[in-house]
Image: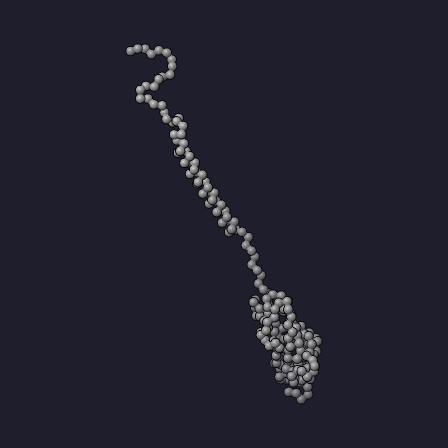
Length: 201
């Protein structure tokens, strides 16, 4: 056998091939597909995160305060005594006719469903007749007639007479007693003394 001498690279023998790992482009398609999949997954995750964040913000957003309920009708209505009806003799026999102003200051419209008074010896009618409706921020003039039905039960000296008015709006139905003041008390007492003088039952 011949001796091998010298130093140098070993030549490849027969059927020996260089490793293919260094060939450019061999595994590039595989790497490109994996990168695309990662980008798709990242985008999907980001979309889910945005959706979740949006849902959380919607659920935790400040809620608007509900509108306050309308006021009770007695809180926004005034009843003001105006004057006895003239000329003399227009009231029925044994009665007293006068006018009042019904004022609705605010809130929804108010309906007067009844006008009454607590004394058993007197009856009450009104014009317009109840029920009638009054808009907010408006005033309605009402003519009220009190008639002595039993003079023995009618007050001869009305100290603080009042009218009971039943009011209705979208909030409630209330019966409110309106004291109409000293001038009304004086006029009513004079009318009842005239109606229920000597000899009247």
